[in-house]
Structures are given as structure tokens and as C-alpha cells.
Image (tube, rainbow, N blue to C red):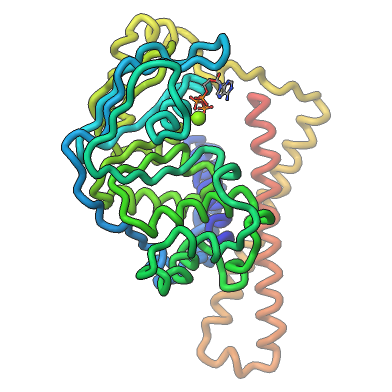
Length: 378
Ligand SMILES: Nc1ncnc2c1ncn2[C@@H]1O[C@H](COP(=O)(O)OP(=O)(O)OP(=O)(O)O)[C@@H](O)[C@H]1O
Ligand SMILES: [Mg+2]
């Protein structure tokens, strides 16, 4: 999984470079060379089996009352700090709500008040009929017991009929057989997060309150979680700063700003769109601000440095051209049916591999020097 993700990052980076240089007449040829090389890369694939196991589902949500939770005039003060000021919130069954807003605006505070982990300074919270809450805390290290092992934690959170499935659920969250016996104390932040999420799949909940569940997840686990949440048929509150993750996941967006809630219909994209319309003036102002990269001062480079970089670029270009020609010839030789009967087949293959590696190296040298020149605006 790690090498898959690594490679995906490298490929994305290369594709960006290629697009960048395709647009420059003098660099098109290099961009094409890079594209060819990229096409030939041995792509790491993920086993069908792996992704199949990762296909997780929350247990069906037991039916709750029509109103799932209602808060009226909720106010929260930490000492002198007023975080929430007479906030009203009402969730109907099946609502899917995103909590968004800048750091410190009270998202976690309200989430904790709703799940009864924190008391409000004033105001009331009413839970609907038969509401069963599954809560994922932002700071998961506080929420898991330390003396237990991974498997014991799962056992304690699980109804008897789920016991036989625990190891496979753990497997889906990338805990191997050995990992299952690790003490929770020694787990990394990411492992704790995955364990806490795994626990949420054990019991049927009908209100999931997830406070930044993707913080410790890699791309793939994030997708898996999102898919499972899309299939979840209960009521959902998810606190997140991750636009990609929130996209299409919720149908209401509550923005926390200045101690109040501002409601928007639709998912995060709809929210951001409407929000910018609401703040036309601000948008007009911000559009006058030059794009971020235009603000970046050009990196100063000396005359010598520039000469050196230009030399590196042209030397790399020559080397790349030569290696590409040689590789094409070798590929023809190796493509011959009787090639492997030749006594020097092994030597030729080795030579081919070395040239391929050299080509890759020359490409990165070229890329590096060319990028440095680009950054300096040359
Ligand atoms: N136990 C506490 N004691 C004092 N102040 C607190 C406490 N918990 C939170 N705060 C403060 O209350 C404000 C709101 O915190 P909260 O964690 O609810 O924000 P948040 O919107 O979840 O932020 P983030 O996006 O960073 O998670 C912050 O200024 C925070 O420092
Ligand atoms: Mg928070």
C-alpha cells in the first residue's frame, strides 16, 4: 500500500512537470521523452483482494425518532472565553451535517456537548427517541484505554455475535495478526485512529458524530471510510477541514464563526460557493490580491549558478537523447525470438537495465536543473 501511494505521488509529480513543459515550445521534446518514460513505468497495483476486504460497511442503523437531537440556546464558556453563544441546532433523522470553520471556533466543543461528554454553560440538549450515538473524538489518544491490547479493545466494544469477525475487521484496518496483540499504549497516532474507527463498526449506531476522522488516515483508508459513510443510513455529523473528503458526503453544512452557527444547504462545495457569493465584497477584494505564487519572490541566482544550471540542462538533454537511442536499439535486439539463446543474453539484459536506470537519473537531473531555472524566472 505504501509503495502504491509513493508511486502515485511520483507519477502525479511527473505528470505536473510534463504538463508544465509541454506548454513550452523549446521543452516539448523533453516532455515527450518524460511521457514515454512514464508510460513504461512498472505500475504498482493493489490486489483486488486487498481492496475487497477494505470494503467496509457500518451495521444498519436502528430506526430513531424523527428528531434525532435538538439543542436550544446552547452557550459554552471556558472561563472567560465565550466559544458558543446561544446556538440552536436541530437534526432530523437521516440528516448529514458537516461542521466546518476555522480552528478554535467551537466545532469540537459542540460535538462533545451533543454526545454528552461536555456540559454546556447554559441551554438545553434533547436527544430523540432511541438515539444510539457512535462518537469518534478528535483527540483519540484520550478516548482509548491504555492497558488493553488492540484485540481486547475490540472485544470490549463488541456484542457477542460480532466476536468472530473482529480479526477480519482489524485486518481491513491494516492491523496484522501480530498487531492485534499490541498494547494500545504503544500505538502510533494513526493506529489509534484506525482502531477507534474499527470500533465504530461493531455496534449498530444511528447517530455518528465523527470529529476529524481523517486526520491520521492515508488516502486509501480515507476513501474506504468515505464510501462506508456514504452507505451509512443513519444520521451523521462530521467535523472536517478536508474538502475532498467532505465533497458529496453531507447535505447540510454548518459553519462555526464568531460564536454562532451559519447554516448552508448542500455539501462543502455548495457551501464554499454560496459563502463567496454572500461575501461578494470580500471576494472582490481578494481577487485583487495577486495569485499566491505571484507573491513568491523569484529566487535570486548568480550568473555562475545560472550558467551551471543551463549547462546541466543541456548536458542532461544530450545524455537522454543518446540513451533513448541506445535503448531503442537494445529493445529491438531483445525483442528477437532467439535472443535468449544468445550466450551474451544475460550481459545485454544487464546493460539494458543499467541504461534504463541511467536514463531515469538523467531525467531527474534535467528536471531539477530546469525547475531551478524556472523558479528563477529564466
Ligand atoms: N477545556 C478547555 N479549556 C479551555 N479552553 C478550551 C477548552 N477546550 C477548548 N477550549 C478553547 O475553546 C475554543 C474552541 O475549541 P474547539 O476545540 O471547540 O475548536 P474547534 O473548532 O474544534 O477547533 P479545531 O478546528 O482546531 O479542532 C478554542 O479557543 C479552545 O482553545
Ligand atoms: Mg476540533
